[in-house]
Image 1: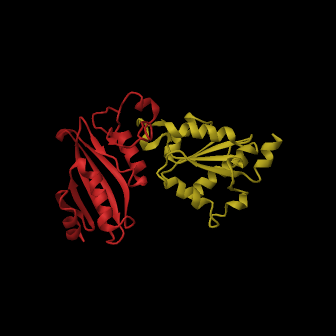
Image 2 (image 1 turned 180 degrees about the vertical axis):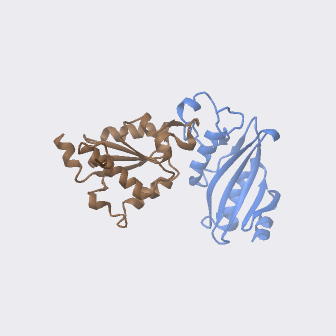
Image 3 (image 1 turned 135 degrees about the vertical axis):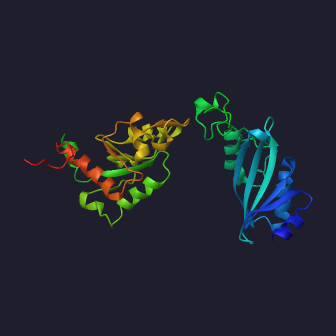
Length: 148
Length: 147
């Protein structure tokens, strides 16, 4: 499955490797994330995959924030991880909430904890998880230099 | 005091997870299964917090859950009691001092019985509730002392 999937997404793939068996990682440009989801829906069909979660990781020594979209592929019985790197100073990525309403919690969480801006998500706000006293100071707790 | 006496025949529980890892919750659920037969003490889960007598709190109290815990507690009819289950509900456990937590359940509501453990066994949870009932009868909740 990995070969055919990488082949059909080849215009977006920066790098691809296996995280573990049945878990393929495809690195894409952050600005192309939304297009990749459109393409995935075209290739696999809208109802044969589902976005399980969005994970953000702070990498201060590389001055990057890594974001991973974990996608469950029903037909292949496998996971696909879409991985993108954002600059830490200005982490902006297009929102996929109009394509996948289930991305709401993942996008709000990643925004609240790491300060990633999902462009086009009108529901984006602070204090989804983080208590008011922390978020009102503009602290993003999962940033390694946040001091909390 | 009369009303307190009535409760001791059938204390209905309200189970609330304020931020537990689910370990204690599973033990609380296990303790209300027929295997441990809590109904011999009249113990069962209340269908609504407004019918509850004993609030069973599991997990560390996060800042967000603290408001909800207080609100739940206020909705319970008098007389009402709180049993804190697990290390986190006692003191904050491993989450103590973390930015989103308040601490143990006693920071928010008055706790009557503490059940330590990570997680406590179902027998321990039931014993905590029984100790609470014994306290209501006028004792200190402990076994009768010899002599």
